[in-house]
Amino acid sequence: MHVMLGVSEYYPLVKVGGLGDFAGSYARCLARKGQRISVALPGYASLDRSRYPVEDTGIRLHVPISDREVSASVSRMRTGENLDIYLVEHAGYFDRPELFGNGDKPYPDNAERFLFFSRCILELLKELGDVDILHVNDWHTAIALFYLEEYYRKLNLLEHVRTVLTIHNLGYQGMFWHHDMHLLNVGWQYFTPDKLEFYNHINYLKSGIIYADAITTVSPTYAAEIQTPELGFGLDGVLRSRSENLSGILNGVDYREWNPWTDKCIPARFSPKRMNGKDKCKQALLAEMGLESDPDRPLITMVSRLADQKGMDLVLPVFDMIMDLDVQFLLLGSGKRELEDAFRSMEARYRGRAASWIGYDECVARRVYAGGDLFLMPSRYEPCGLSQLYAMKYGNVPVVRMTGGLRDTVTDLDEGPDRATGFGFEYYSPYMLYETIQNAVTVYREDRSSFNRIAVNAMEADFSWDRTVSEYLALYRRLRSQR
Ligand code: ADP
Image (cartoon, rainbow, N blue to C red; front, side, top):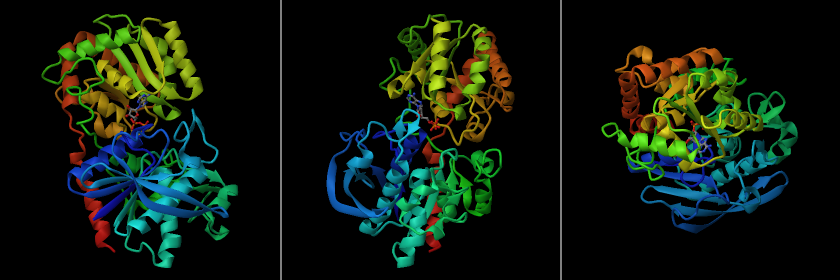
């Protein structure tokens, strides 16, 4: 069986969020298990080409975009046995400073860029000839499934290929106005609600949901939530209509990449049995961020995109109350301008006790995971969430809203200190967040042995891919047997 993963980010080559982590760790885990897997990725200018040897495959792809034919060359990175990465090279689309846009403004031609990439994936399948499963991810590649069904299969091409769409975040759908229909190079008969249309817009993700043989999302709870009007972003009805083919498979972590015993970015090593290094990491982080050192103050941390999804509107209204608990606060994040400014001003108000590192940096993120005592993730919704899993591995106790993957991965103190891995709350309100932080801070100050027990439980919780990769493999096999 040959699986092709179509995806717009891939760690460690190029990443802006959890999707990149997913692609890199999942593909490598499959390959280690002996599964043959190829990855199709845009050949971004910012991609790290020094990781693996890159070769020109000689393959040239030609796809129609509007009334033009646009061409790409294809490079290949051979990363070792079983795993090849194909880079779709087109300087006009992919030689840009960022992947998806400038700051929080998407590039105006994203409809065209990812349409092109998606169609190139199908042409690449034709060239390779032996791919059995096409596994696409999020809106960037979902539109490929529309063409597979409505174009290639009608020409008796790629008939044996079975398809999986994984939804990593339903909040991003690749919605474009109907004036972009000409780009797709198909007639208006496809601009209907059972194909491409969503309230007078083209919706790439929706087309994938309609045409995929199987749909997965990244946690069991999120799979149920997206079928409700509250968290369905208008697509709950379409998802319910496909509920028989929809399942939730929890994302995994590659603990060879995320491990405080081996991490080269952090100043001291530690593990559940040797925790001394954790305090060194905290002290070094406080110094790095210009925060005072005080062993009695818990350090509350966040590593997050600054987006509405992440629950920043719960943190800001009670920020002063949180600081009154005599804690320290550190945020690493970037995104929405207003939120960046709001956190900058918090730093100015609580100099020495609160710091905001506005930007994106993988090594700083690892030092924050390692140095923090409490890790805040009060998401409005959370498909899986990887940050809390990394925080847990680094003994940084999560304080989360019990939604989506956060519910599936964090065990609240209500279950007792022997089982708990963090602190959770249900109702989406600033006060509930505050109360939960207050409770966590009390445990930290007054019952340090229980707090340390929770931290060790979190470090020992196993969310490796080995637990769930077999669910994807079983799904692929089932689809393959149906052809
Ligand atoms: P999402 O994909 O919704 O942003 P996840 O929790 O699934 O959320 O994944 C976020 C990933 O991005 C994690 O690897 C996290 O460490 C990383 N990340 C988020 N913000 C930053 C930042 N400012 N600097 C470095 N890494 C970040």
